[in-house]
Image 1 (cartoon, helix red, strand yellow):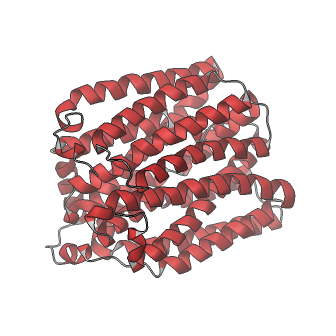
Image 2 (cartoon, rainbow, N blue to C red; image 1 turned 135 degrees about the vertical axis):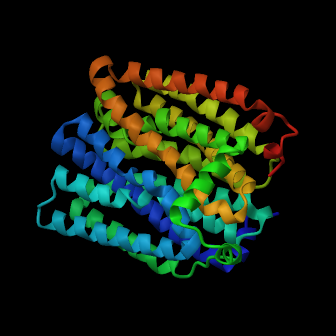
Amino acid sequence: MHWRDPFLVRSFRFQWPADLTTSWAFEMETIVLGWFILVESGSVMMLVVFGSLQYLGSLVSPMFGVVGDRLGYRRMLYLSRALYAALAATFMLLAWVQALTPVIVLVIAALAGLVRPSDMMMRNALIAQTLPPRHLLGALGISRITSDSARIAGALAGAGVVAWLGMTWAYALITALYSLSFVLSRGVSDGPAQTAVIDAPRLSPVRDLQLAFGYVWTRPVLMAAMALAFLANLLAFPFSLGLLPYVAKNIYLTDQTGLGWLGASFAFGGLVGSVVLSSHRFAFRAAQTMVLAGAVWFAVDVLFAFSTHLGVGMALLCLAGLAQSLSMTPLAAVMLRATEPAYRGRVMGMRMLAIWGLPLGLLLSGPLIDRWGYAATAGMYSALGLLLTGAMAVYWRSHIWDRKAPANAPL
């Protein structure tokens, strides 16, 4: 197998650049609006509310899975990206007339947050449907390269464009990226797996969800992957995503440019991990890899919690990004491989429920930081994550740790 093999499929040749431009715009928006909220409001609580609203849709992502299984993910993909472009254009106009306020940002972020968490679900479901199984891990790794490389460029460009040209021009670029993504997404196909789903007997959406929850509940491998995804979102991602503007401004005493470098460091580590996974040079036992890398991620975060030097923080974020890529990408492969095609959309939609750990972790961290300080809160989060990851590996050891377990078949 070669890393170029997924690009032999026409649908993937359209999906890859469409995902790239969307991810780039996502990261630019996160940096631009996060800094705007922090500077204009001066409130860490408002910052964590903004971060939480971006993941509001994780609560309804299983229903997106039901709709995707019925209507097709291609249609959902290009419609959602049309919505992103419309909302970005609204931001651009408000910035142009100088009417943008933190409250308006929160309202529009809530609208985008209803759809945004399901974007990765739609990407992965389309990859599983349109590519042969032997290309699954490589394609997922290449897809993560898309988001990780965009995170680097988006973080740096988002900070730089605002600093040099202002909010209006930053959002002109973001709107153009979303519009291009919409056009490219029209070339993506639903894939042959969709036929089996369409021909299946139709049940009510509620019954579809009940079947999906029962399906996951009775499969320990899927439960273990869901648990690890929730832990990562609850206890690790808050400090490398939503709270990064606070860390940059109050711990490292830097500006937007420093914030961009911190975000890019985490993304660069993720990019390295994605390149390793997509290269096919190593035989990974997927379930073991996701657990070990998750534990390393939390251990690095313990060190990051007590770092006060920008250069050290960037190095630690790079290591954390590497570990999260080596954990989250095999996790997605484990879930997709363990799920029957007819359930794939709903199960991946349920996987998105784990993202709700991120806004929950953010909202809890705000008052804890005010009371105990950043270092104590971040250290407690990371140590608890490391402990619970170990407990999870012990509890499901026969399903995710045993070398002979199906989840550890080489990918």
